[in-house]
Image (cartoon, rainbow, N blue to C red; front, side, top):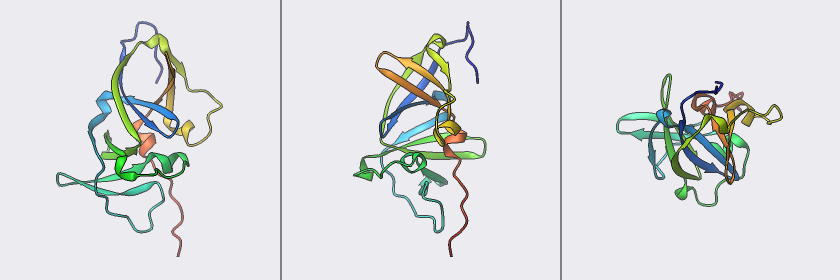
Length: 153
């Protein structure tokens, strides 16, 4: 998605995982929850942290640390669940912390750098220049897409 001149400001929910600062469109976020009990999924990839019962709806929880190949969090109870709307329902992104909703002007937007390594390259749609660093704008669908690995017997 390209940002053009004359485009309206974009509102993003900010969050952190490891050293990375991310933003996701506010309209893609259903809610933010503290640590939730997760039911493990046998034979799932390491990115799938488990399943959450969200008021009668079963939601897959995808660990952003695992998705990015980072070390596990010291205390998973401090992590947050960012419930996002997808084409096929909802999913949870398990992140280190959730920040504020910020409004960013299109002039601060830059296209995704071609040098980003996978899996960031798959998730990041562009970069916003902030006063204190960069904010990686991610696509919820791509962030929740987990790799399919062969089942180990």
